[in-house]
Length: 401
View (cartoon, rainbow, N blue to C red):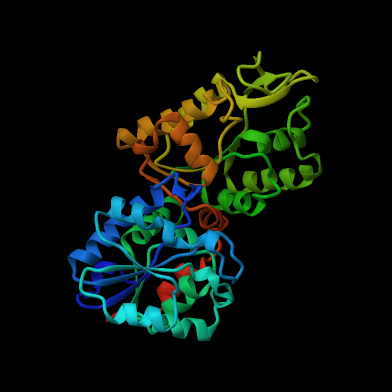
């Protein structure tokens, strides 16, 4: 983590190109979730208080390098002003004469939102010409968009190598949390991974078993592992063609001393629907006409006993079909256990990924985890052990003034 923090540089009177992630959920021109906007406020407040001129860069949707009014950032202005408590100006292009004039006329503490950077093909292409046009607008580059850091785009990677650069407050907080989870964790470390398929998380699983002491598997991927062990899983969701890969992961984990924890008991149903009739059965005795859709209480109790030995938890993925009640009980109880141990000060808990955040919100424990990442793809690639271009560029960027 060799990068400059925002607090390491003097931004007074400087035009700061702030890469944010304002790709927020919206319906009919209204923001439906302000989490990403709210998480940017500490950086906005810091820059305003320090007397910087703030030019906000972001993408929204996938306009594929074309001007698309339906993906304009203009609709965000009322919400940004409300959540940030400040006036926000707007320019209908992120480069060119109008943007340059707007930048030149800014006063200290002003905020200017630039139009969707993905309206230009040069953004995804990370083109030197587009980067040069953007760089004209600012003196310093600050990246506060970890959720876009896995993209080697002009505003996530290229600008960091063209201007004096630093990590924003949110980016620094995210990277510090992630470093404490897998790079330099307090041991023992337990990872929780759920979801429907192991095929989409093979790299994650292979990386985790090299770094953690315990790996809890839930959801459909747990069924695939149980099937690979020769356990009859009935009509449960399973990737039967991934048995060899599952066995290879289990063999590798055993050699590395990582205990893979699979369900000991399961909640099973005949038909998956709200409040469907269900039973709790031993994981080795799933009826042929039923499907496992959640972990059972014995599994929760065993995981709790392991959690009490651990110092660090990394969580990505629910334990079952948490969206349909009451089949959120296993995930909820596990979330409550992690939250309680975190509150007690005995556990450093880091979670991320869209389904994970939704599951923890459903359990009502998001305020009790040490850190919850709002990133999706970037968090997953970090779990895979990949170098993220946006982070690497900050570490290798020009010295900030």
